Image (cartoon, rainbow over all chains, first blue to last red):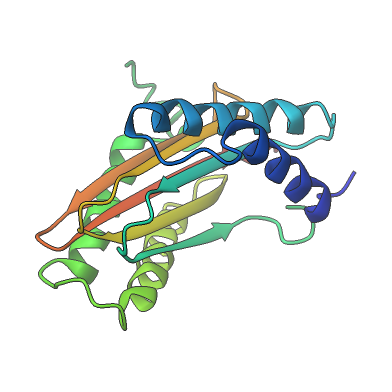
Length: 81
Length: 115
């Protein structure tokens, strides 16, 4: 019961394809998309039945020439998380 | 929201975390304009300083800190988080900050360590 990065990436990519796929950016739908992406990813992850807690975040940004930088830092157990 | 003072060690305070985050952001990008060269340093500094301050509280928690900085140029940005955890002990907070030229969104997640 370890955290398998490839398995989880696969689940997330599939969820993105299903929810957004080839759609164009639409301000009216973007709130639904982010919610659906995180909820569906989370439910697929919990189906793996591994002894983990999960946190899923999703950022959607329109392609408009703006710069976006993100970073994350984690204080946890490197052997298990 | 009720506060249990006798159980302070075991609970996550979103208000405290929000203050820690705001101070870190102000300290690092308070009065500056968006700069493509410096933005990666900024996001790294914000997450590291926030994490250091949280860890100093010496609570039995694991932390995850996320930071996104976006230039103001008319583009739309939407974010969402979903968490599968123990709602009695775990918690999160998100801080949205902006100045004249950029937006900054920082999320802190605290997951209790089962002792």
